[in-house]
Amino acid sequence: MNTFGREFRITTFGESHGRAIGVVIDGLPAGLPISPEDVKRELERRMFCHIPALNPRCEPEEFEILSGVKDGYTQGTPLAIVIWNKRVISSYYDELWLKPRPGHADLAYYIKYGVHYDHRGGGRASGRTTAAIVAAGAVAKKLLAHFGIEVAGHITELGGVEIGSEYTFEEVKKCWEKPLPVVDDVAMEKMLEKIREAVVAGDSLGGGVEIHAVGVPPGLGEPHFGKIKAELAAAALSIPSAVAFDWGWGRSLAKMRGSEANDAIVLREGRLALETNKIGGSLGGITLGEPLYFRVWFKPTPSVRKPQRTVDLGNMKPTVLEFRGRYDVSTVPKALVALEAMTAVVLADHLARAGLVRRDKPLS
Image (cartoon, rainbow, N blue to C red; front, top):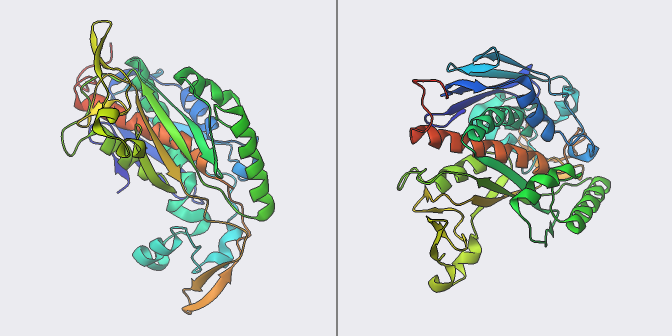
């Protein structure tokens, strides 16, 4: 499926080397202020062109808001955004036809769609398609801001280098002023060195990121099959290259006894609260009014310059593939921006499910 969400829904379309990619957003109320600058700001956050190894294609991200906005405000009708693909070089992929890259969705797409799938640039499976998700996230973030909710993330691990310092939510937001959004400067410099090493080796890197959402009201999420953490996990694992998800303290909690893992319930300024919030802001899949946080890990980019063994599907014989096209040495920084966007989409959807966003009247 290419549609995500129940009340606040996004539908993405397009391939990496097609004419365009884009998104249609449905379920928006009327009266939300939206400008091209809102979308442009989020799209530019995922570019990382100042580190060429992270975005050798460096698309200019030219886009148009085709519908759903009038005089700078949403109309309550579907909002469509199209992002044009400008810097496409498909010739790099001629030698890859019917030679699936190990670790890439090429093989799965061939098994499912046969010769009809678009292999150029990874086609529909390309990380390029996350630009459409980021555009949707720009709109969702504006809606969340109306309710005082903020979403921000940072890189916690890259190329085996992990952050070591403690940090606040404000420091997470501020770290986006650095070359990489990493709160720990020592770790960031080591990550940048790992990127340089991977470029020289013709290889790629994976890593992990963390998302925080603050100002989330209590009561979002449903028992059993609509749990907020389950739907955030589904959103996270829909992003290309995502391989693992950890909620709150995650696996660390599994190693504790219950008396250690449980968050004491306290009163804070007359409101029920958690003393430590090791559980990540929800119990029973329902938000408590505490900050939400979780981590996601992404595998290394499957396209590398090192020789890799595969099968030529044209003659069903083993062959060796050496990729010569452009590729991001690590998809982690771009994936982080897409993960922020999907988090905002999930929260916007649950605001609508809870009746806090109404489609039958404009925002006040």
